[in-house]
Length: 110
Image (tube, rainbow, N blue to C red; front, top):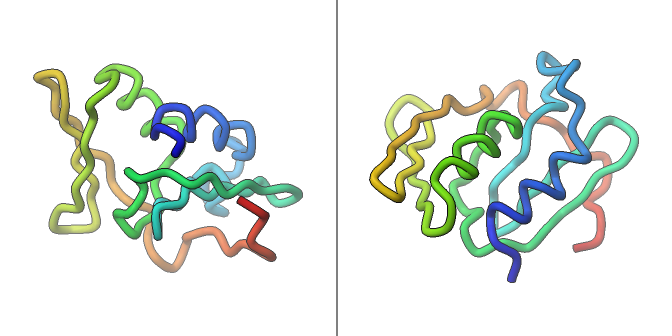
């Protein structure tokens, strides 16, 4: 199974940071799959740590996971936020509002 750090590195290639308002800079972490789509192409990567059931900004999450290194853990917290802990560090990132989560036209093969 792919690590969260590796899955985010791959998913980051399928995001478009210029279209944040359209949800295209987001990754969806649901059902142990990291999903990303840039409006033209997408990816779904199996990952044990991707079961928080929300979408977050890919760039922000990648920076936080990179700062922590291996052993990062994620938990959902009140107010649609994601807490990332590990290596003595703790970060919080807000989730993309449910109404603005990207809609994937077709689920790409894993």
